[in-house]
Length: 109
Image (cartoon, rainbow, N blue to C red; front, side):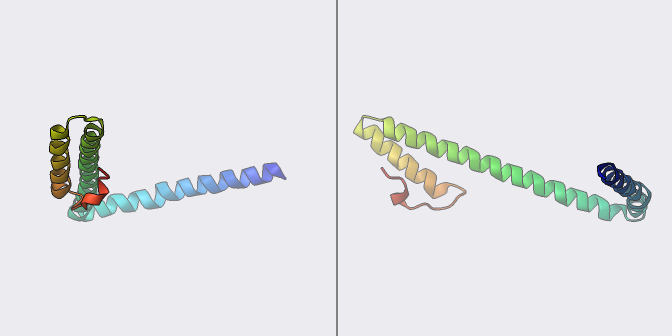
C-alpha cells in the first residue's frame, strides 16, 4: 500500500514538472518576446520596491541604533551638564527622526 502512494506522489510530481516545462515556460518566453516593455517594467518595479524596502529598513535600524546609543550614554552619564546635553540631543533626534515625533514621556529619563 505504501509503495502505491509513493508511486502516485512521484507521478504527480513528474506531471507538475512537465506542465511547468511544456506549458508555463514557452508561454512566458512568448509573452516576453511579444511584450518586452511590460516584462521589463514589471521586473523593474518589483526590484525598486525591494530596494526601497531594504533601504527604509536600513535607515530605521541606523536611527534606532543611534537612539539607543544616546540612551545608553544618558543612563551611564554622571555629570549633570552632559546629561542635559544628551537629553537635548535625544529630544532633537526624536523630533527629526523618520519615525516621526515621539513624546518626551517616552524617554523615561
